[in-house]
Image (cartoon, rainbow, N blue to C red; front, side, top):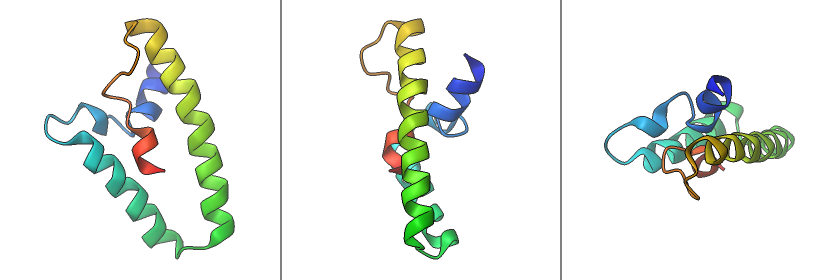
Length: 78
């Protein structure tokens, strides 16, 4: 559970008290800046984040029984 929480909250950024979803979007912007916007890397990482987001959100929903956990912000980085 802990590793999926770490992934789904983008390194626990989802627990930040003010605007965690904006910080999740900044992770995505930083990724684009550091990869140099190479399309193959972007597609690969988007696919990876998509798969990890599904798994981590499913685990978090199972344990908290909340239909849309606000701390899961991995989808904001996409």
